[in-house]
Length: 168
Ligand SMILES: *[C@@H]1O[C@H](CO)[C@@H](O)[C@H](O)[C@H]1NC(C)=O
Ligand SMILES: *[C@@H]1O[C@H](CO)[C@@H](O)[C@H](O)[C@H]1NC(C)=O
Ligand SMILES: *[C@@H]1O[C@H](CO)[C@@H](O)[C@H](O)[C@H]1NC(C)=O
Image (cartoon, rainbow, N blue to C red; front, side, top):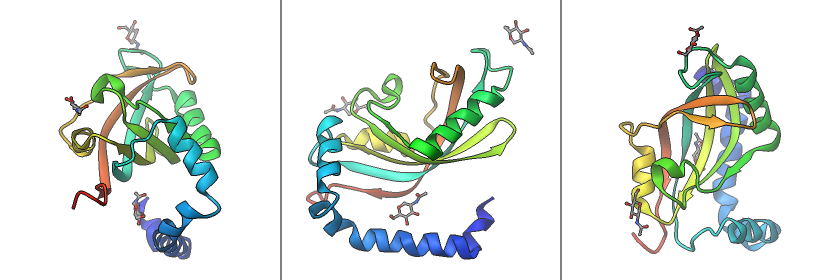
């Protein structure tokens, strides 16, 4: 699955990623500021945030006992994220408390019962991001009523983390 990284398309995406980093600072001040400012205001994003990005997997079931895979629900969740993206405010507040803002923007079904999700996540509270990035954190099964599916989130694999620029 990860081998696509070496394909021409993967190289192009890598180059676009670098471009995105290079233009990130100016983007806030130009054409995107209207959108980003409104999103930040609406989700009450703190001025100084800790962030992380990466991937994580989740399994979907039709029952709380997690004994029957919800093939349809997992497929629909993946498709919905690829089409519409998902901004989740107070993400997993049952685990972290309030204030964690997750953006899910890409999904791939990697096996019969597992979806792989790409995320960027942010909070004004560093310990919430520490906890999210810890491989030891566990997540109780949750019901997603939109897709009629019980989901088990597996640990989040953080590839990059950032701190508020005034901190370090
Ligand atoms: C995380 O962000 C860095 C810098 O923008 C980017 O190069 C990397 O591909 C991202 N990782 C994921 C898994 O999205
Ligand atoms: C799943 O678990 C429920 C509740 O224990 C049970 O009623 C059902 O028969 C189980 N289904 C399968 C396919 O094991
Ligand atoms: C930060 O989050 C942790 C839990 O992850 C919580 O115990 C703590 O009270 C939070 N701190 C503030 C200032 O909200």
